[in-house]
Amino acid sequence: MTSGGSPSSDRLIFDASPLLHAARADRLDVLGSLVDGRECVTTQAVMDEIRRNSQEAHTAVAEEKWVTVVPSDSLPFLVEFSKWAQRMGLKDDHNIGEATLCAYASLHGGTVVMDDRDARRVARQYGVRLQGTLGLLAESCSRGHCTKTGASALVDALSASGMRLPFTRGEFVSWCEQKGLLP
Image (tube, rainbow, N blue to C red):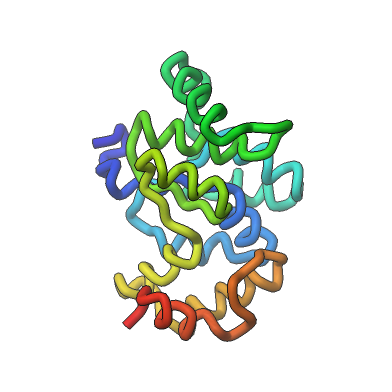
């Protein structure tokens, strides 16, 4: 159990993309309602990435009560981060956020919500539990936290904010059905 009382298996560890695009689309509240009851965290490196992309989005994410920025400066964390930095092949500032998320997950458990294909490949190779933004939304539909129509509207808003998706507007449900994410 975590200090907040939720099991680590329920913990979601968010990368920049879902938070940034939900903030840009003014839908952070909707994203938060879909993960209600689950512990949701991110790292300072991810928050810094969001700030580099949009100060407004950073402010919006920082003000949300459902996502917490976790400490990432302990010695055990820094040792784990060093391993993940090497695994991710860090160059400049690319994948720093992803490396911090994987380090946190390795130490504390949880599911990393991350969309970067290359970072996901490395994380999967080392046994990190992963879920993409679209998978998270499909799961929310399956759990009855939202309708397919509501999830589709959110995905369209994320797309309009600049999020890259593997389909065009209005195709979320059919894409999920094709991937076996929705019945």
